[in-house]
Length: 342
Image (tube, rainbow, N blue to C red; front, side, top):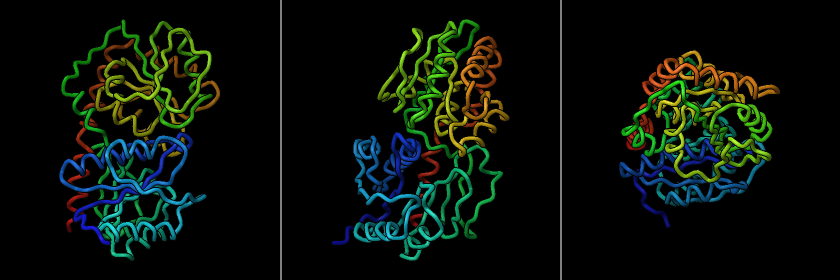
């Protein structure tokens, strides 16, 4: 029986320790904002090993598990999304997945669905999408393959943060002194074991207090000054605690900017390089480049310099907070709601 979901959105994304959880977490942020303005949201994911399905269900969203595929997403899966949307009366499918190509989007559009996408690289073909979001700092400089009239949301003004970051920002009273010593290390939801081990060993030789948000990364023989945190529920609290962060160049950057945390940022994946470089040029972070052998010493040196320069930290903090105000998910949700209703 066809359900009547009116302005509902079906979200297609994936996440796991192997590929990271960033796509799922930002889609959840957008979904929560959509729900707050009266839209219904459902998810469709492959049942990859890890916590992605549980995260979606714990947030209270209906979930359909799809048949796992190797490589890119096939047109048969796109047709499965069409069938789900038809059965539920859903008008819009939002895709946040590197495996979706032009044919995948064409199947969705050919079924009469409104097609929306979240992107990081501008390498995909979005010729049948009518709404496209790229929250990264270099986004306004990129060229997108898209249809005329496609609604573009570009840059960190649309950073998809959960509500707790904007809430924490309201009561934040951040200051920096030469006595600062609190370092947060967060390298994303994927496995960054060797890189994390090297960075933590280097920081272990410094007079600092380190909190390491482990995600799926296993690190043995931690230095005495390193506290390892698992299953962190309130990342905003950890970021408010930190004087400096060491982090990858993914979505975490926007959370740190929102809360004014000076960053030492590195690229753990190809799609993080542009962000890391742009954050460094903008003055929000120290960009140490790609993760590689010897990165630990370079990260420790950058952390030491930052902690010794409170004025530089103040400037970096203010620049980041001006870039990301924590309201991006709400802006994106309102825009997507309008697109669905057109």
